[in-house]
Amino acid sequence: MEEPKEQYKPAEKLELKKIKKDFPKTFKKVSCPSCTNEVEADNLNLQNSIAKCSSCNVIFSIEEEVEDVKTKKEMKQEILRPEGIDLFYFKDDLDITVQQHIQGFVAFGLMIFPLAALFLTFIYFFGEKNLHLSVPIILSSIAVYFIYKGINSSENKTFIHINDKFLNIQSRPKNLKKDKSYDADEIDQLYLKHATDGSGYYSIYMIINSIEGQKHEKLITVNTLSKAKYLEQEIERYLNIEDRAVPEANA
Image 1: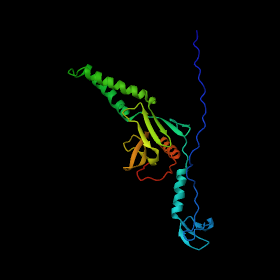
Image 2 (image 1 turned 135 degrees about the horizontal axis):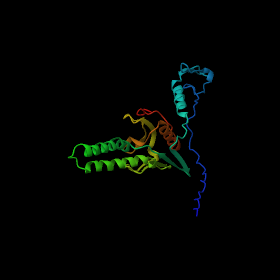
Image 3 (image 1 turned 90 degrees about the vertical axis):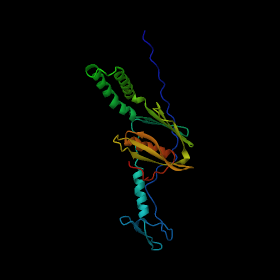
Image 4 (image 1 turned 180 degrees about the horizontal axis):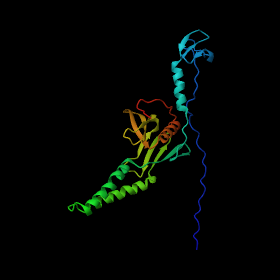
């Protein structure tokens, strides 16, 4: 008899919470520093970054205002959600699930142990007779472990939960990574760093303003720039953080 097919209930569409604040607008009004009157656009020389007030005839620099608009225009570019990241809003909380790449220690193990196991197995049967059988067996077992971890790398996920009080991050399976929690009010800024070890990975760092002083904490590492930028964008948007340049950033 044919077994009944399992029935699946369609996922319910939940109402997304209202975003606290949009990204900065790419416009700016210029006021005269002398009389505080608003300066008309015809009196602004954007090429030379100077302006003239028609009310009191003062000439002044608007270089800071022009640079501010340029910076905000660059930040305004919206990053669309890349494959491998899911967002879920429930009430006032934000849950982010990140499908992780093969972890560094697993990639290292895949490069080293399978080849070492094959080499020593060959040596045991066709070369050095003093080599104990336990050596290739142990290395083969380790190689099987890393191959298994590589095949099942799709199970590697990072979960970021944010509310108005805390930002919590968990990796599953843990792979020696501790669960971490940060006070949301202490997160001052997020920025990106490109790995310099040749892996091509990108890390998201947070600037934390704690009682002990300001510190930089690595939040997560991902394998593409689009993932890194998208996560930075969405976390800063949720926490109502206006993006700004950070000297340590290199991506």
